[in-house]
Amino acid sequence: MDEHVWLRIKVRTDEQVPSITSVFSGADWYEREVYDLFGVRFNGHPNLTRIMMPDDWEGHPLRKDHPVGGEPVDFTVTREIYGTGDRRG
Image 1: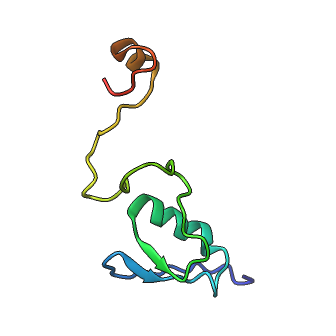
Image 2: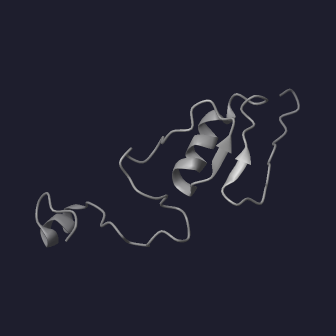
């Protein structure tokens, strides 16, 4: 910490890698975010649950196999087009 050095870890994976939370406790939230958005499972993680997406969300939105533009954004203009409360169009 005194040297202000950045650490980047890159791995190739088939959806599972070992967790580094036992070495770096601060990695807990980063691993949960990667799991939630990309679907990478971290073996040995103490609490690998969703952190950004709703619990009932199916899939992982930043994976390449997830459909792009699958859910419209709720802007005022979108409400005028689709109606109030109807977010599916």
